[in-house]
Image (cartoon, rainbow, N blue to C red; front, side, top):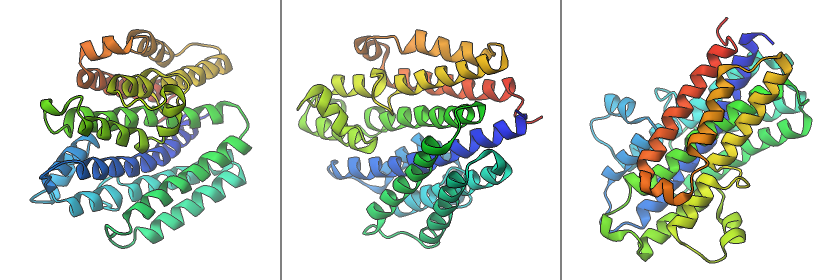
Amino acid sequence: MLGKTANGLFWMYRGLERAENTARLIETGQRIALTRLGSTDDEWRSVLQTAGSLHGFTQRHEQVTKDAAIDWLLRDKDNPSSVLSSVEHARQNARTVRTALTGEVWEALNGTYMRVKEVLARKISERDLPGVLGMIRQRTGLVRGATHGTMLRNDIYDFARIGTFLERADNTARIIDVKYYVLLPSVTSVGTSLDNVQWETILRSVSARGGFRMEYGASTEPRDIAQFLILNRRMPRSLAFCAHKLRDNLGYLASEYGHNAPSFAKIDHIERAYLSFDIDDVFDYGLHEFIQTMLTSLSELGKQIEVDYRFYE
C-alpha cells in the first residue's frame, strides 16, 4: 500500500474517533461540574487542558468561560481538534482514499459530515447540548458500523483500526485524567459519595456503566472502576483492550508485509511494561503519573507508525 493511502486511512479514522471522544469529554466535564459545590467557569480550564486545547484557546480568548470552552471544543474552526474540525479532517482524508472505501462507508461518513456541519453552523445552547452530543456519537458510530459490516479484512482495514484504537486509547486516558487529577474537588473528597458519583459519571461517559454492572454489580469502588477502564481486556474502550487491538492489527501488517516494524515492538512494550500491572500497582505508581506515561507512549507509537509505513512519501 502507498504511504499516502495508509496515512489517509489512519487519519480518517483518528478524526472520527476524536470527534466522538471530544463530545464525550465535554459531557464528562459538564456532568462532573454539576457534582461540585460552588463551581465556576474556571473549571473548564481543566477540561481544555485535558483535551490538549488550552494553549490554543487562551491565545484567542482572554478568560475561560463554560460557553466559550464548549464552543471551542465543539465548533471553532481555529481549534484543529474541535468536533467540527475533526469531522471535516476525516472527510478530507476519506476523499483522498475514496477508492479504498466501500460505498457504504463513504455514504455514512459523508452523511455524518453534512449533518454535523448543519448542526454546528450555529452556537449550541445548553438546552440543546445533550442532544447534539448524542447525535455526534450516533453518527460516528454509524460510520464504524459500516466499516465493520462491509470492509474487507486486509491492510486497508488494519490502518483504519490502528487509527481508531490509537485515538480511543488516548482519549480514554484523558477522560480518566479529567476525573482523578484535574476535577477532583479536594483530597478530603476521596472515597466519599461525591467521589463515587464522579467515578460513575466517567463510566457513563465512555458507555461503560452497563458492562461495569455486569462485572462488579452495584460496586462504585474507585479501584474497581479504574481496573475496568484501564486493565479489563473485554471492555472496548479500556486502555488494555485498545492496546491489544493495536498489537493485533500491527501484527497483521507485519504478516502481510513480511517484517516486524519498530512500531510493533513499541506496542508490545506498552502492553508488557504498563498494562500487565495489577491495579494496586497503578495506584502505587500514581494514577495521574501512569496516565501521563501512557499518553506519552501512545504519542510516540503514533509517530513511529508514521515512520514505519512512510505516511508522507
